[in-house]
Length: 201
Image 1 (tube, rainbow, N blue to C red):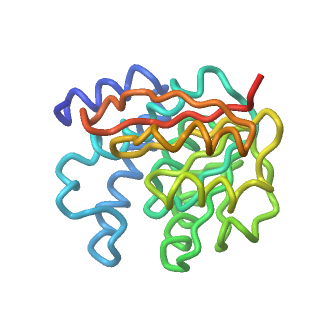
Image 2: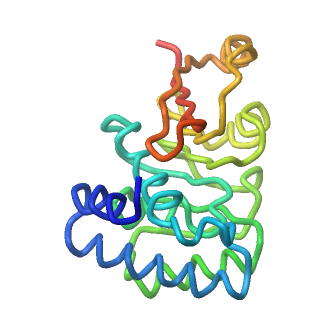
């Protein structure tokens, strides 16, 4: 997907105000990336494809799930800030690194996002429950489930963008946590997937 194609894909999924906000946020990330490493410099020329579309596609994978969101290890704002701009609220972004959390808080204020929040914390210490939990390439699946178990309810869906998913260990892992899983192909890279975990019916 080219950057023009990526921007057009985004335009079809957010309103004009949302697209303007996302454009502003992209500019903020690129500028801040010169001061701290929010995203890999190699991905800056493809930021709409590699980061914005990659984040926004989670809404479609959520399949209509609504309510409270939690993004673990938000870093430079992906996917949490993109989801917030697109209307996923309330949303809590957890980022233990102070400089990155400060950038996220400043971005929320500048973009006027009223129901987006940042916690300078590890998720283990967070007091927040969510209907949808996202975490983009943060820790192993097992570590995430253990660290954020207290943030999940009996209805929580986990949307976990990964590289190639090794499904061999997932049945046993899901059985321990009373979950079922399926894997969605990422729109942005052929070698990337989105692991979806849901409560067992």
